[in-house]
Each structure stands twice: as C-alpha cells, then as structure tokens.
Length: 227
Figure 1: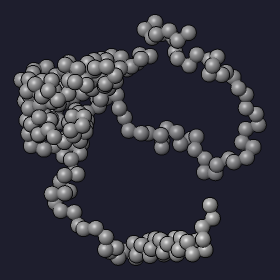
Figure 2 (figure 1 turned 180 degrees about the horizontal axis):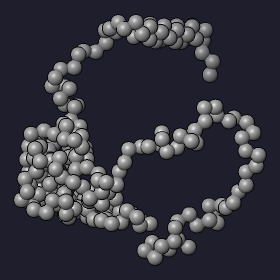
Figure 3 (figure 1 turned 90 degrees about the vertical axis):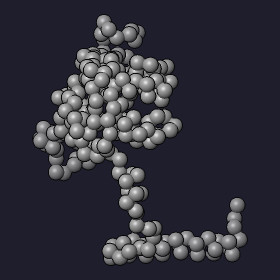
C-alpha cells in the first residue's frame, strides 16, 4: 500500500533523525565524553548483580550448612523436579550417579561424575534455583544444599560435615582432573594458515557414506539398539 507524500516525508524525517542521533552518540562515545544517559549504579545495586562464585572461592558469602540440613531444604524446594534423592524426576536433570560412565557410549554427566568444581553447584543454585523462585535462598540454605548434593554424590561422606566459606575450597570433585585449559593455540597451530584458501582448494570431494546408511551411533553391548 502506497503512503501519501506527506507520510513518506515524515517517515524519512524520523529515519534521518534516528541516524543523526546514532552518529552523534557514537561520536560522543569515541570522544570519551559522558553521554548523559542513566545513573551511576549504587553499591547495593552492584552487590545484587555481583553474585558469581569462582572455583578458587572468590565470591563466596559468609554462611554454613550441613548435608542433613540441606536434605530438608532439598525435599521442600527441589525434589519436585529432581527427585527425593536427586535422581531426577520425569525429564528433569539427574544430579547424582553416573560414576565411571564418562567413557561409555552413553555417559551420564552428573555433579559427581562430571562436574569439575563444587563452586558450580553453589553458583548455579544461587543464581537460578529454585525454578521459578530464583535467588530466594539464604546463604546458609545454599551451603546446606551444596553439602547435601555433595553428600549424595559421595564427595562428602559425613552428613553432619559443616560446609562454609573457609573449607569450601578443600572439596575435591571426582572429575576435577578431567578438565584442562584450551590448548588449541599450541596443539593445532600447525593446521592454521595466515592466508585462507578461497578458490580451488581441493581438486575433488568424494562422498564416502551417507548418514541414512552409515550407523553414526557406536555399537555397544550397553547401548540400546538403533537398527
């Protein structure tokens, strides 16, 4: 549908104004001058966002909790999705088990079998759980829930062990040594090229198999049949 000349002129004026504002904003930002937008975040606002916890313990708040205390919290806040024993309910995530399964065709990646650091539990639960009511748990609740999940994965043997900010980094996860830094810069450097090939890079390409014919799922006695 064609607009009237007046409407088209108005649209062009609005678009031109938006373009000039964008150019002005970019130029001002490049000059390092304040844009005059927003307000300075208060310490309280920053504290509300700065809640990440690192594997070295940085970011851990003051608090404490035992697995026994965490069990009661888990049953009330988490079991509806994750099961009474963190075994997973319906299609919700399984949080325990899977030990020794990482080399299998169907590895079960849980807290105890796969996760590198206990801080991942604390950090994720703190930011995102319980589902639908995130960041409603106290610091003591978080320590207790972390201790419970570690106990369910046999990382903490004593259910009365008190987990706190001082002993948190002493926890060693079963698969902690299964992770390493990305080393592609050294191990794959020989494959890199300063100049990318854009034409006639390979004389011919041969199709050796098709997914419909090639069984892409490895055969295994423990794996289900895919025939």
